[in-house]
Length: 433
Ligand code: DLL
Image (cartoon, rainbow, N blue to C red; front, top):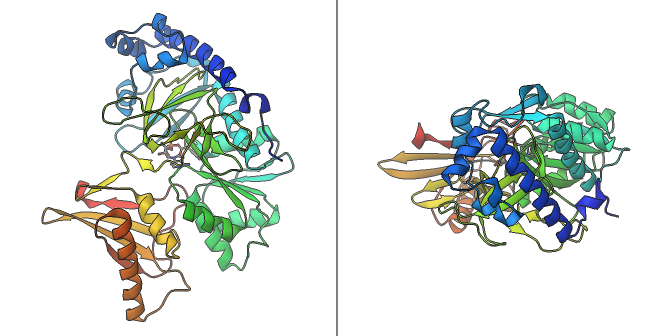
């Protein structure tokens, strides 16, 4: 039976959700106008005042906020509460320039942790579970967010943080952990290590995993589920909007429900800024409806995504987002063709490889080159050059059909590509160096 952490709001009617969103948006915009000169200036430039915002549909009148604004206003320029009311920061490196520093009041931490608790309960978590949190703790939001959510659900929380794989496995086995929270790439690595130590899926006490913070494919999900003997749930979020738990998967595993009583989502055309209709792919934009200290308004995430309001069999009514396909800034343009690392991963996993690969992009004689280093699994490892060459050709053909461009494939020995304990580094683009 499906369980919910906050059933009333998670299953609220559409009308009720819209009523809450209308009310919260009007209040939030008036508050940031009064408290944050940076927002007021941006709104004035767009010719809009709080009086123009009466319902959630009026959100389209508001200016967007981007990473560049965060850089301009660093560190305190977007703070909407006095420092004495703020109790925490979290921070992420971002891909360019200054780090993002996000601020929280106690209220902000409470709603963030509640969102993570919703995710844990959706993955089957109860106060009988032992929940091992192997996301990094500290400035990264993964550890603190899931840790707080796990407390709220009443799980026995095991705050291992990331790394030290042997110790992770020891705690999973000794404490009989039932829920594992970490990045999908680290989950795959833990699975690989446990298999090597002789643990099969039936020996491993875990029943569910809550994996996010990076793009991962359906094939990778199936792989992890099989090795660890669990159901693997996706969780999404970003530091600017709070951290993990902005959206999460339910038992349906068909998209992540956005906690839209707190975070309002839109999809826009990344080139024109035009809001796109439901079902179309574009850039995801979030507005924090009731966050106090760092209330991002129409923040452009750069994540490429699709929203759907199709009814979900889990009973939750909140809008769902598809797995982000990648980020506008992850997208590689190789010989004029858009390539997402997730597409390459899909081809590799479909041909029986593990998700251990690296994508090398370079420019030789003014032409972009794409090379994919792929680890052979121990079972396929061979020194028969003919076999290796056949495998390489098959992978190259799969990549050509998925991407529409040629890639050089190099098979490498098992364990030769560095494993990651947090977000995996998949792409080395030498064109920028
Ligand atoms: O990664 C927050 C998080 C922690 C989410 C733990 C889930 C679990 P940042 O470091 O600020 O925050 O990175 C945010 O990571 O804009 C996406 O591009 C990417 N991302 C996060 N979750 C997913 C996911 C955390 N489930 C950026 N699938 C976001 C794909 C994801 N990409």
